Length: 370
Ligand SMILES: *Cc1c(COP(=O)(O)O)cnc(C)c1O
Image (cartoon, rainbow, N blue to C red):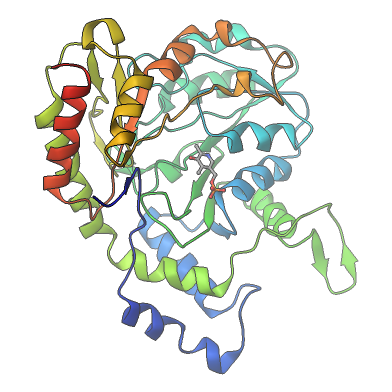
């Protein structure tokens, strides 16, 4: 049997992509905000219902340069239950991450535990939308406003999602997206930001291009965060199909839910009310005692059958070799710690056949002796 991985990129037809990039062979313009870059940016503004979008080379640079553009000092409250990128973006800006625990149902930052972590050094909150679950943006926004804090959302898992009819890009000071090949929507590699304040956006654009203001003046210590034309063309093509691709993901999500509901010791991701979903991931939480097998045992069983699940997110950022004993212990965020030990993310991508979903579900059930 062929290997099934946790994700596989959505791609346009070869012909559609070739037609999109043909012009580049005439223009010889491959980067530095060319025609495809502009077209992709405009298309994204349209999809996200805002004129505040800037493209980036990847999701990580979107985060790192966003924090740089805000010119922050001090502590940033975030969660350890995320991808390494979130925390690295904070630390690489000379800022200190402060780990807040997550809510048991959505596994996003628990706003109820946020206020007790505030100090006079707190400058920002960096909550992470996870798997397609959205953070409690009302509560987080209110706390930020009361305390004069910036809010930067890591929206790497939340592109195309809406809450109460409004794009996630409309919340917080900045929302960052990733268009990596493994994400629900991709430009091979790439990312984008939605930045509300025009002055911050201007800083961001300068930082994205080495901090260069014009041919003879370099104003900021920037980096290279620009998206190239080939990626922008890929993004343009994929964006044309995003509705269909999301529909396919929805069917897969539904099929998994039908197959895996009501198994003792297995909890599925709750679908939040009033959220237009992107069905980014299909995580399950395994209670080993009730299910009959540990998360790691299930992982190995699946692997032996060529099904490559992922432990998103294990270990916690507070357990990384580079962060251990620096920013607080894993036990300080017990809900996140427990989730990291019990979560398994099952394969989810638009072209995953429903028969394969059934096969994976059956295998999963049997792994727990159910
Ligand atoms: C993928 C991801 C990123 C980084 O995006 P890249 O495009 O891979 O650089 C950041 N945060 C989270 C939560 C992610 O999943």
